[in-house]
Image 1: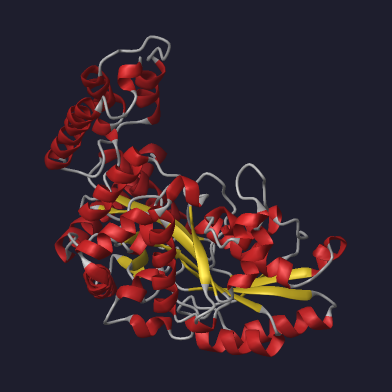
Image 2: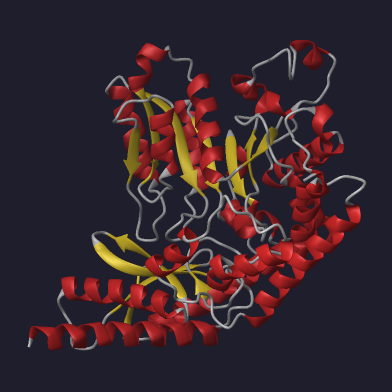
Length: 482
């Protein structure tokens, strides 16, 4: 069994085994003709459930053959130009190279004596990101598993900075757009706040938080004896890609002495954009910022970070253990990243971004993100001119929200059913993948465009498929009714 351990004596075995795996993946990618095979849950479950995990195959080639049947053949391919579903991006090759290196070396980024140069690389990338945001010389941060964890840590810091005793946590309020990410509500729950802790602020027709409504909500909180703990602004909402008015929100946070957090998990790609950087005007005033490099920096999952304006606030997550990071290490200025992280053991995910920047540069990333934003603008024009569809809002980033209106149908419920069916049928066909959401109480479809290889022709083709499935569902309903 020791022959399977990666070390100096098995280096050649490692090379040949991983090379075989890379060959399998490359062959799969080269042969991919659609984003999904269309396999159903029951069919794939039966294949996976039939495998006896207590009877190993004993051979990597055999295991790869089996993996082809249980995973690779039916994987959802984010790199395919007709994957238009969730906030999943195709990944760049330098980042995949970084992933291969970090997995093999397996550094743990909690303490210096487990990571050395990895710690310094992560810290340099945090500084680089903070500089791009404009947070100032006292800024700091940490890589995280994703936007949900980043938002949780930011709101934990905000709660502690509010200086409210635990018995009064029910008085704390988080104000955020009605279109913000659900992790805000989840964070409030995990932080022990009351059931009314999250105050939903109305949005305008472009799905951006209304600054006037935020001002009223802040005033109401104070009048009611509640304590505004934080305002969460969103730079790229999950559903619409909308960016809240950051300068106006920053001014209100300063007026009411409230922590300002910006969830830029999606919109962080603008930090690398030369064309659209201005859309993030005002983000430099934030007390904390969430960025997801694995969304708009084209990085493999996971690669995220939370940044703070004042590194001193990270003390709220600092705990010392004699076996890991004794207090004397801080006094000796030994850089232990666990001192500012919610996690202890942590992957060297920063290496992927480092390799990307060293090969492609920030401008290269920004150009890719600008391409998908340009594509969304073209897609919006296509939708707006097509009587088969109702488009919800003009995009700021790369998301299109719309619904199909089958010919001759006026019933909102029937239109809802047609759109639900169209999405499900399209997924089952494997020809394309789109997401769905609700606008008000009505069913809409969503294109999340993060693949520069997607074209307007792809968008038009998928719209035709959606329309066909929607029309067919109504025809099937009439046949059944008759």
